[in-house]
Image 1 (cartoon, rainbow over the protein chains, first blue to last red):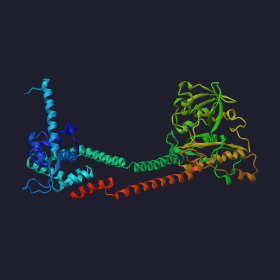
Image 2 (image 1 turned 90 degrees about the vertical axis):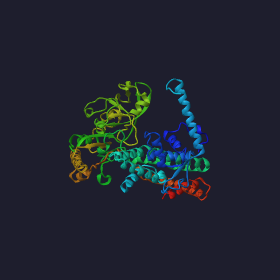
Image 3 (image 1 turned 60 degrees about the horizontal axis):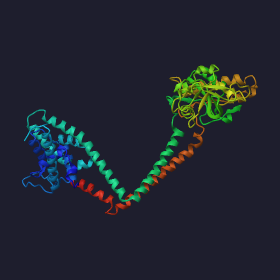
Image 4 (image 1 turned 90 degrees about the horizontal axis):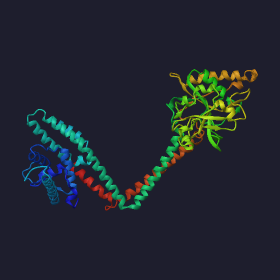
Length: 116
Length: 422
């Protein structure tokens, strides 16, 4: 586990998408994949290998944690494993957003892109 | 879906076992959902596209996961080593000593007993008509009943075989001993060079071309041209690799020879473990080794001083070549002794024969002598390495009893991870 969020930046695209998917609720792997696909209009399709390789790394880095029980009482599939964003994971996601914001500001300041 | 499960399990085999045990089921659950969706979508190629993606994914992600496992193991190893430095030092030194000794002795054992001649083309095709284990020379009469097959041949016998033994595509002869000469190079101070006398076909039989200049050819056996071919090592050491070495004169006590070529790098000649500086034509023997003419024998004495190598013609077996070589050899013996030996002693004088043996490893005066001791030494250092490994295993197994040791800690997640998913 790493203490400084900045030491993990920049985040790989898949990791950042997973952090965003877990920001509002705990999810299992397939749900994460669906959320990412929906948010990106199908442009980002996480495959199983990429997803679980990222999850393995994020667990080791303390960005997410695995839940002992399903948070959804209506879920009938006990085989699914659910993941939750940790406080550290939230700080890292925020740091990545700041980094991307700063980049965006720089791009706008130089006239590379237009925007408010 | 059963077939899909089997096929997906095959893809999962690309991933490290630990990763597969931890996430394999979850990955298949996710893939099965995607596959159902693809089939429901009605697009005929959607399931196939999903399989392609899963396969590509496995080939891209699995190597990264394997690397991760390797780095994890390395980190763990370094952590353990750093935690117990004395143990690490003992382990490394034991293994380094054991492996180092084994490597050194194996190299020596292989080089002396088994390695083919370096720098020689297709050495496995070479055969020897003399005894590879013998060095030196013999003057007088060879008694085949007590001395066995001929250890060396005379220059005249070599010439007879070269010219009349049709089973061989080429034959060459080389002095069995390495000689040290006193020479003056370009008229400067006397210095020592080591070399041997060889016949003109020496380099051709061994399949060797010159690095610069030229090497002897069979034609050199018929002319009196005092040339010398020097070894690549000697060229580098004595002449600094200068190309103007060609034409350099070597003054010997009774003659002067001129360097005509340099042998290629790595080539040491026909005798394993010996590196001559120079090769001179065998025809020059009376002038470079004065005292007795070894090229022409006077009955009843013969000067036997040459190893003879050759290559068999295609389709000729060593047994056929040996039979033919002995026929030529016997005819030469009869011609040599015929006039001076009484019919009663004729059989005794002619009771000599040649034996053909593989020539890939070349001649070696030390191979036979050190064969048993080197093999025993190799076995001894092998046992030494086994003892070092056993000691290390004992040292490693001892701390496992301690639950706070790094070894014990390492076992916990692996066992629990596997059992949780089984």
